[in-house]
Amino acid sequence: MEKSFNAKKFISNNAIIILIVLLAVLTGFTTKNFFTITNFKNLVVNVSPRFIIACGVSGCLITKGTDLSAGRAVGLAACLSAMLLQSLDYAARMLPWMPNIPWPLALVIVMVIMGCFGAVNGVVISVLKVPPFIATLGMQTIIYGLCSLITNNQPMGGYKKSYLTVASGSLGPIPYLMIFAVVVGVYFWFLYNKTRHGKYMYAIGGNENAAQVAGVNVRASLIRIYILAGCMYALAGFLVGAKAGGASTATGNGYELEAIAACTIGGVSANGGVGRVGGILIGVLVFEILKICLQFLGVDPAYTYIAQGLVIVIAVALDLRKYLQKK
Amino acid sequence: MTEKTESLMPQQDKTEVLAQPETDVSNADLDSEQESKPTRSSAFEGIYERLPDISVRSVDRFIAVCAIAFIMVIVVGILKANKIF
Image (cartoon, rainbow over all chains, first blue to last red; front, side):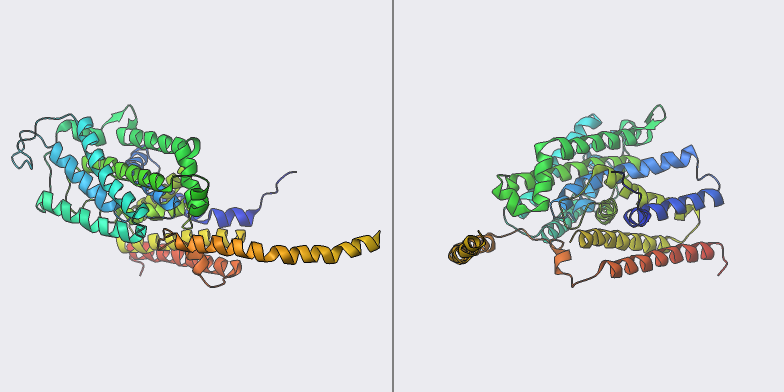
């Protein structure tokens, strides 16, 4: 039986993507240098860390939770990376006694530390049954306080060249940041679609009680999800710090809302149990392309914030519409 | 044949009536078990279920209004950027 193409359904399911594509086409035809390799590389470099953060948050959203500490965790990770990877001859080194360590080791250390914060989130949510909104809101403030303490509210810079190259370098035409994002994307696709952990995650999001009765260890699964999210924030913070060439307590501020919005736009339902890695990538791209288009068109950043807010509202309304249709 | 089926029916009704209290009890047990288990809740969990009855058509209208507002914001932003108003 052939399925006829339902134009109304296609438009309602992809309204945001259609709007953004039209905006990109309009921008391309009315401005110079929009459809160029440089601009595409710029887009890829901006999207990569945000995609990694969104992948981390997605597990929390799919299990009907949330993680409001993502942005501050990225900031703390950027500051920790800065402390470990400042140049030996930099006068204002935060840790003068720190020996010269390779950047992969620094990344592992930062991931372990942020994984511990994720574990705390997971335990508070799954064992103590604190609502994720409240638990991660509290953690957000704690992380910000810790970041202020360890940095003395001073911005940091003076990085080693090898660390800066992680963000600015490329393998042929492919930026290293994109390679990191692709590896994370493939890993998460495999995890969500081909592993038991992924099945358990969707089961918990669909119906936690039923998953529990079916033998899923809900507590362990949730703790793993939040630990993985913490590790992703660490990686994203590490890359954001390298890209910016500096870090401070303000780094990562607001990133969690963008990540949650991108996930919602990409089809991760606010009702839980639904979400794909491809959708998350589309959600992040929609946000970044919107920002870049409005920048190219010379639009005041205030209008960009309003437009982003409207995109989020439309995404949630479309999600609600799907829920009502199923009902 | 029809008499036989008719004579069966009241008995079936009786068995259903007899069965009912047991199923009611077991459902009540399940419900009470679920209530006693502290369920993990979030600000978003069941958010759609808590909303009042909304039709798909009204959601469609809302989406259309937001889409128009989005286009207007961009158009106004572009016009202001080009100092048209």
